[in-house]
Amino acid sequence: MPAKTNMDNNGTKYYRVTAKVGTKADGSPIRKQFLGANKTEALAKRDEYMQQLKNGLVVDFDKSIFTNAFKFWFEDIYRPAVSKSSYSRFETEYKKRISLCGLNNMRLVEIRTAHIQAFYNSLMDNCTASTIHSTHKVLAAFFKYADETDLIGKNPLKGIKLPAKEKKANVNAALIDDDIQKLKEAVLDDIGNFIFLFAVFSGLREGEILSLRYKDVDLKAGTISVNKSCKFLTVDGKYQLVEDVPKTETSIRIVPILPQMKPLLEKHIAVEREKHLRLGKPFNDESVLFSSSVGTHREAANVLKGLKKLFKRLDIKQATFHSLRHTFCTLLAKQEVPLKTASVLMGHSDISVTAKIYTHVDNAQRKKGIDRLSAYF
Image 1: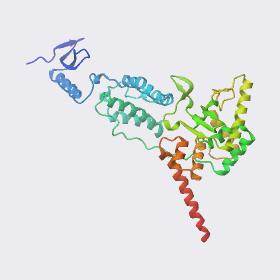
Image 2: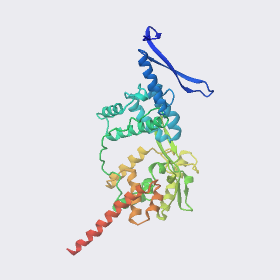
Image 3: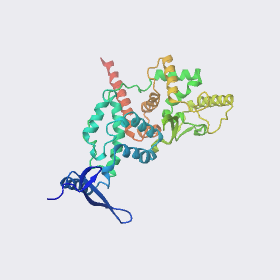
Image 4: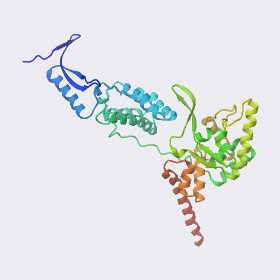
C-alpha cells in the first residue's frame, strides 16, 4: 500500500507530486509541485492544473492574487494607455471602494460571480446605483484584461445583475430664446459674463473652453482651434491641473466664430490684456483666454458657481455649463443646419449623439405645426 505522505514541512505531512508545466526561454523545463493530504489529492490538483493549462491559462495563473494583479494592470497597463482624467476617475473608484472589498486577498481563479455580486450588493446601502455602475466599469476593464491574458478561465462578471440607474431630471436642457436674450444683455452690461455667451454660440465643452489659449484664436480668419481640454483633478494624491489632448479625433476641430460675437471676443481679450498688465504678467500666445483673477486656469467649480449666481439673478432655470453647449446644438437644429455639419461642430465621435438633440427639436417643431391647426376649431 503506497504511503499516504512523502514529505514533511514544519511538522505537517504532505504527499507531493511534480510535473513539467512549461519551458523557460532558455529551453529548460518549468516544474511545479502539487501538495495534498494524500497521493490521490495531490494528483487531482496536478491534473486540474494541467487541464487549466490545456484550456489556455498561463503558467502560475494560480498564484495571481486579485490585489497584486489589479495594481499591476492599473499602473502598468491601464495608466499609460489613457488620459490623466480617466486614470483619476478609476483611481478614485479603486481607493473608495475596490481597495476595501472582499476580493483583495482572493486568487483570481477563485473569484466567482457570486463574490462580485455580494460586493455590489454590499454597496447598495451607502451608494447610488450610478456609483455601483462606475465601480463595475473599473472591474469590467480589469477582468477583460485578465481574460485576454489568460489569467482566468471565465470572466466572473458574466451574469452580474446591476441595479437600475436612477432617472435624472434633464438639467442640461437648452436655454429658451428669451433666456439667450437675457444672457446677451448681461454680457453687454458686463463683459465678465462673456464666457457663458461664448459657450452658447461656440458649442465647446467646458474643459475645452477653459484650456483655450490666446494662440488658439484666429481673429483674422474668424476661427477657434479646439485641440485640448483641462480640469483640476487629484492624481497620485495631488490636486492639480490636468491638461490632455481630446480622447477622440473628432474633438480636435476648428470652430468658426459667429461674426456678431467677434467684437465681444475682442473686448474680452482687451480686458484680459489689462488684467495681465495689472498682474505684471505678459499676455502672449500661451496666455489662458478665459483666465482666473490671477491669470491662471480657472476651476470648473468656480465657473459653475458664477453661472448659477448669474442665472439666478436673470431668472434663468437652466444652470449647468453643459446646458450652454446643448443650447448651441439646439440652435443649429432649429436653423436646419445639416446633422453631419452639426456633429462636426460639436466634436461628437458618434453622430447619433447629435441626432438625439435634433430629433427632440424636430418633434417639438412638429408639435408646433400640429398646434397651428387649432385655428380651424
